[in-house]
Amino acid sequence: MPQDEYKQHRHHGPGAGSTAEVREFFTPRAAGWDSRFPDDGPAYVAAVAELGPRTGDAVLDAGCGTGRALPALRAAVGPRGTVLGADLTPAMLEAAVHAGRDGAAVLILGDVTRLPLRDNSLDAVFAAGLISHLGEPGPGLRELARVVRPGGRLALFHPVGRAALAARHGRHLTPGDLRDEPNLRPLLARSGWHLESYTDEDTRFLALSVRQD
Image (cartoon, rainbow, N blue to C red; front, side, top):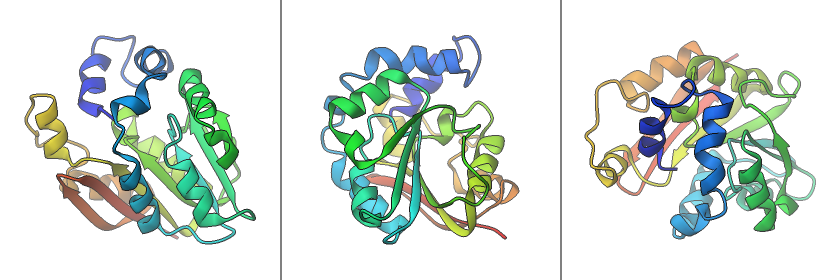
């Protein structure tokens, strides 16, 4: 997702990370979202493969948007597995339905910081671009940890790396970027996750973490 564009917008909205602000940004963009990024599909498939969900697992795409990861998640867990896609913006979920991706998952309209799920009920969470859209990333990551069993996994993903994304929008990386490893690792640790691997290159960003006991 174009996180820097969103972050510039959010400073002028009704409050960083508020439901109204997120929906205000994404609603008019939802119908054309996939056409803006037509070549991202293989990167999503590869990231889901590295997350490693297994046959029969229960998985969540947190902030699923138009659902580009949902078919790959379904293929990984098979017909006996459970795939959920949660997003805050109705128009994004409508775009997922229009693309036929609702056949791969149960879609949930809701806030990933307040999930209607039991503790330890999931095996893995996939989250594309999510962390930059959370008003309070710590509580959001803790909520994801709550619903994932100990030993379960989290993938924080973006189809291009931090530097490439910043350059796309004419900006420079700053030391305060939450996705920078020195910032992300302790944030995840405080939120119940152990950062297991970190990749930040032009073609993708992928941070894989394991739910701590």
